[in-house]
Image 1 (spheres, rainbow, N blue to C red):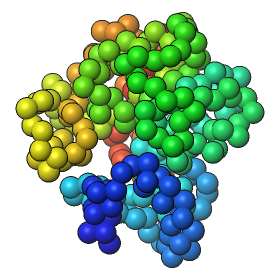
Image 2: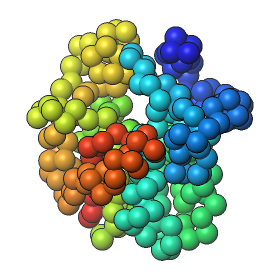
Image 3: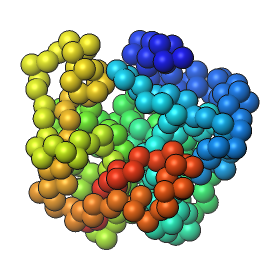
Image 4: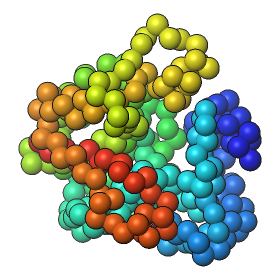
Length: 254
């Protein structure tokens, strides 16, 4: 199973993977049914989740029904319990919309929900995050998760996010982060895909963010709350929902 997942993740273009995933979800959901683990996004339970990862696949992390990972389930629970995302009238911009969320957010009548990306088939607006076609102070909420690690000029992207967020608005900008690393590491001279995957965790990542990520956002002008939402959960909940204990949610405000 690991070898099959690694093959598809590394060789199949992401837009194609998204399309194929709709076909395989019913099989996964039936094959892995059980009651040991639960996906909080749709409430389905399973005997096990699937492995996921490029170089070293993580065991038991990919939900068979929503195809959510640890970070998606954590974000869903945070939005449900700690924000008014599901109840307030909000103009929302969602970058590179995750399949686990896309249809669910689209159906929410309280949201004016807009998606954007350069390549995703789920994007309403095809756009470069460093040059966005939106007016200043447009959105109440911006979700931009696991995007900035792909962007060579992440400071420019952060500036664009700040520009289009309304004063008083908020956002969540999750990234893969090494919390044991103080300073973000990047090296543009590494161009080989295999080598990049070994060093950065994925062939299309351009850096490994350290704890200074939060200060990078603050330098742009954001107020940043570094939220460890798993501290508010029991160990049973963390295990049941297959969350990454200690993962930080970067909650930003303008």
